[in-house]
Image 1 (cartoon, rainbow, N blue to C red):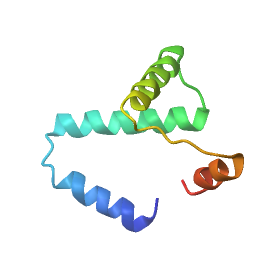
Image 2 (image 1 turned 135 degrees about the horizontal axis):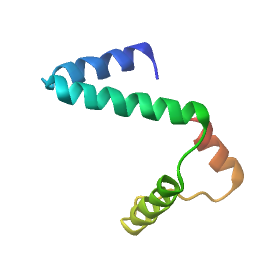
Image 3 (image 1 turned 135 degrees about the vertical axis):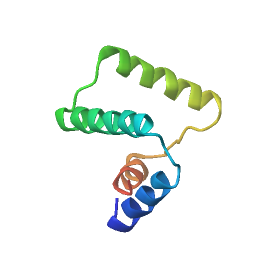
Length: 79
C-alpha cells in the first residue's frame, strides 16, 4: 500500500470519531493480524473459517475464475 493510501486510510479512521476503547480494540486487531502475517500461521479455526467464507462468496457469485495459470499469476502479481 502506498504512503498516500495509508494516509487516506488514517484520515478516514480519524474521521470516524472512535472512542478510546474502539481505538484500542482496532489497534489490537491490527497488531494481531500483523503478527500472524509475520509468523505465517493461522489457527485451524481461522483456516476453516476462511474456507467457509470462500464457499459463501462463491455461492454469491463473488468468486474469481481463471482459464489458465498465466492469467492467475498475472492477477496474483497485481495484488
